[in-house]
Image 1: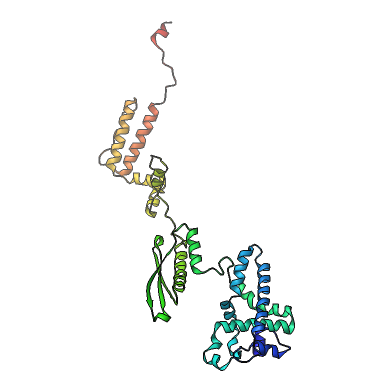
Image 2 (image 1 turned 180 degrees about the horizontal axis):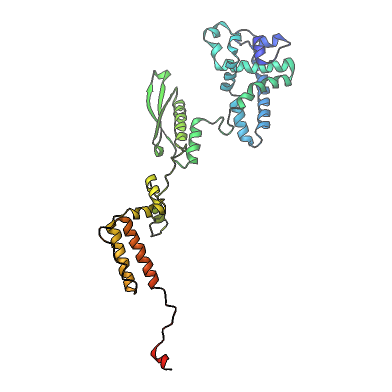
Length: 341
C-alpha cells in the first residue's frame, strides 16, 4: 500500500503489482513482459510531454532529450526516490549479491510497474503516473545541454569562445589489471587551466576531468563588476581633449572655499586695518596726482605720526580735491584775437 501511495495509483488487480515487482530469479511469473510494455508507454508519454513543452526544439534535439530521460540511470534515480528496492521480490542468489541495489534491476522494475498500471486502469492512468514523476525533472533540466557528455559540452563552449580544444593526458593508473582506476589530466593552455579526474576507464576519467575543466572555464568568463572609475581632474580632461589652456582646479578643501568666498566688506576691513605707513604712502601718491592736474597743493601727505583714522581722512580729502580740479570752468576762454574783432 505504501508503494501505491507513492505512485499515486491504487491497483484493482493486486496480482499485477506483485508480478511487476518479481524478478526472474524469484519465479517463472516475473516482470519482463510487463517491462516491455511499460517501456513503450514510457517513451510515448515522455515524447508527448516534450512535444508540448518545447515547441521550438527540432526533432533531433527532442530525441536526444527523450533518450536521456528514459535511460537506465534516469529510471534508477526515480526508483531510488520511490525506495523501490524494499519492495523487490528477488531470488536467493540475487538477493545475496546485492541485486536490490543494482541500477538495471531497479530501472526494469519501474518500467514493469508502468506496464502493470496500463493493464490495470488504462493508458490515461499510466500517463498520469508518469507525468507526475517526470514534470519535476523537466522543470530543472536544460534541453540544450541535457544528454550531452562533459567532453562535448567543454568542446562546444571553447569553440564558441574561439579557444583551442582541451588536451587529455593519462597521469597515472591505480589498482590491479582487472580493476584499474585512471587518473586523467585535462589542460586548457590558453586559460592556464589544469584539472584532474579519475574513473574506472580512460573514457570515464576524461569525462570526470572535462566536467571540472568546464566549470573552471565558465568561471573564468564570469564578469566581475569593477570598481567605480575616479573622475579625472579638469586639467587632465582638457589635455585629453587637445585643449592647451589649463584651467585652475577647484578648491580642494573647505578652507580654500571659505577664503574664495570672503565678502567685499571683509576685504575693506583688511585695508582699514593696514599699517598707517602704507596708507600714508598711498595718500602721498594721490596728492601728487592732484597737483599734476592743477589741483590744490594743500592735499599734502599725512604726517608720519598720524593714526590710521587720520590717514584715511587725508586720503578722502585728497580725492575730493582732485575731483574739484578736473571739473571744467563754466566761463569760456576768449583769445586776444576775438577781442580785437
